[in-house]
Image (cartoon, rainbow over all chains, first blue to last red; front, side, top):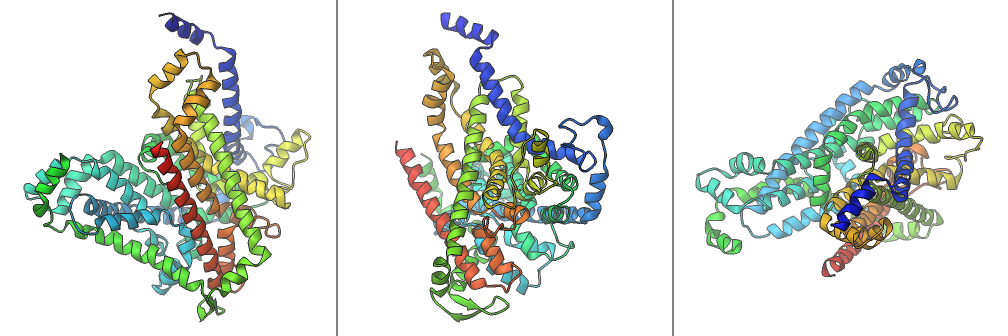
Length: 283
Length: 300
């Protein structure tokens, strides 16, 4: 009883510790927010005026010229479309191949499925950057250099979505699967009409992670593309950073255009992202 | 119970095409992960012609040549320094943010969004932003510092500031992931545990040190390992900010591999593959260490 009143009291009057805590959060937040703030304000003001004239420009300084310059300096629109294509292809393929694999690893019993699952886990521990040379050789041999398919093809299956969905499927009561199978539902129909719908949150998490990885990919798309025809937006923004190195505002404008969809995703779907983190163990 | 039920239906479960559904993913992983793994090992034992193609078997020749060169030793040190600095900045910063935010502070929703923002940035976009901040003469950061009468360092032209520039942009980029992981971890701590500690009269520091941090230890350990591995694979930051310079001061494993295999000079797939193998071995060693540490964690 007394303890209760004490906590209630201390809540009503913020203590010194709470104020200090608030100030420290404010400082850390300022540090994290600084690059975002500086780049946004600088992108929306005429190049060079910001920072020299202080941190808080007036509304009369508002300008969109940097965005116009960013869009014309690199074929941003075209590269945007390429990225959307890569994301669509890669995510769809990873989810389909991943769901099929996860189903095969969970429901039917067959010899060697533990070993195969171990192989899937091993792929999570191999740094992708160290595999690019043989993949570069192979994709070039197929004549897929500088194509959207060439950008996506090494990633049509990935360990992480398989892992996420395997864990989700393994938590589905076996009776549900047995009932569907006894009703005469085939494996593929059972997977897509019974199992996947019952794991919707985890499948959503897998979709978001696959899409983010596809959208953010940089090293491989940089190597395998030569022209804007198949260049992703991430490669485009890195080239903008080089070609416009004397006008930071234009770089910032380009970066904002690239990051807006993922900012929306992070704010809107944080629940699913955290979901993937506490269930899975690897990025 | 479940095991018994499974056994009973075993014969029936084996019918159908179920097991074959592994095939698409398996074939793709074999072609694009396991084949390259062995091919990289193979290539690392060959000399290369002008096009980068393997010519003659040199055994460990490439390894000996690379591992005894002071250049490569610098690459090893630079890789580790960048990885550890980025990891430390991200993990310590995120831990502070998460611990402090726990108390339902004024505006904690806003802070939550701010701390998650770096996660929205790809390595390339984060690098582009920092390129604008660190740029020589026109960089926003030094312009800002000049306003306070401070003469900022030549971020990208002097070796030590250049390493800090890469580490800061890597740490900032990794911070978002660290914050999300630790947010998930602190939410998993039962509120009764925290309330009990508070009834015992634990102050904020005491609570963090004795209860919260020990209970989040698996997540902190996980972050330390994965962020170090991510940091070892840093590439976009270096490609955009410094191109490995000045004088190789920021050339790490992946950038060295990139230069050897895809840079301006004649491609050397053999020696680039040695770098790849070294990276694989280091990541494998760290992963093995992680499993040992996690094993201990579970036993405790």
